[in-house]
Image (cartoon, rainbow, N blue to C red; front, side, top):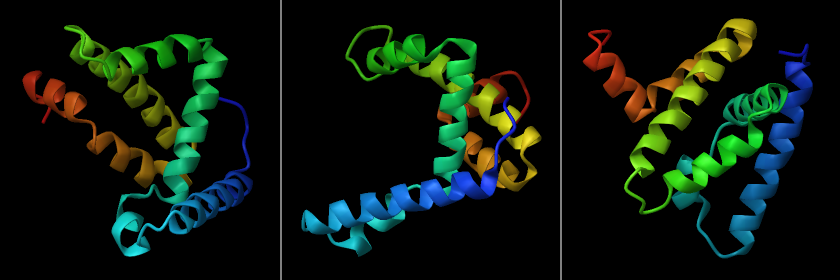
Length: 126
């Protein structure tokens, strides 16, 4: 991965989060209702680094097509979800290792992935 300034990425993520919060508030949504579901600043940074990693690998288009297929009602939608989570897991692990300030966030995001947990349990890892 490319050398990055985490502090600067956090500034950008904070700005993005502020815009999202303001937008939803102006739409009449109650912040007490939606704030718990909003990503944290560090989660936005990890997602940004994931997107950069996909670009570096030349996988952005493939990833986005798989994301669309995963949200569909196709018979293989679950296979696409599993593939996306495997890609995310691999990249999140790399981010957690390469950027110690984001390790806890990357591991937390990994823990939310149902298919990754299921696959690890099937393999005897969890």
